[in-house]
Length: 244
Image 1 (tube, rainbow, N blue to C red):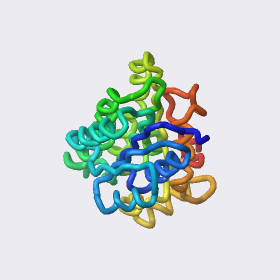
Image 2 (image 1 turned 180 degrees about the horizontal axis):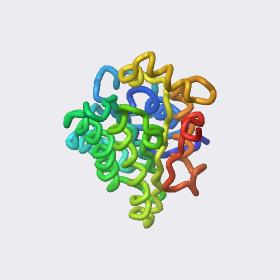
Image 3 (image 1 turned 45 degrees about the vertical axis):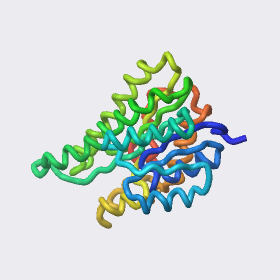
Image 4 (image 1 turned 30 degrees about the horizontal axis):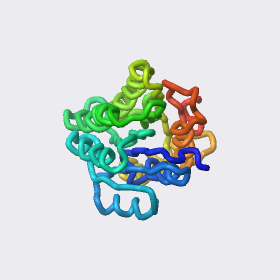
């Protein structure tokens, strides 16, 4: 029997990268998974790749109407949620002095506001004893030049987790943050130059990027009863980057 046998999971941003790898792992461990993505073609490809026990719902986690449509679909098809992996997020570089309102709003609308409302709109469907996982970032504790706004939007998630575990303790819902370091994903290719990738790799003790599957194994840990006594933490999965 799988570690998530009979569970229902929702994974936002699940059409690529770390979230897709996690959704695949959840299904392998017995869960039925709902994934979201903004591009229908990419979402369809992800559903095909996962292959079974999956529903794709196109939408942007920063759009509250899209979130309503997502959870209406979950309610109609399964009627419950056991695991929520709020993973949709993005960040682009802009150093202090060049930050625009649009840059700030885009980061906080998706990474902080979008995550908050993803969790809030999921709550009416949540079973007691469920698990909420949010995707943070090593950037929130390292102070990389140019990534101040992105880092701040991810740091907010750690604060959310502290408060929400208190507010949800009556339902025994755990709330944790998974904090990846540099991971080789399609999104990374969009926001980092080759030079930036080489710089980040040089900061990882093993000398190479993490892989989406390495995040998926930790997401499974936080989703399953293996982490039953883990609550309110930010679990760094960064190859030791944040430790040195």
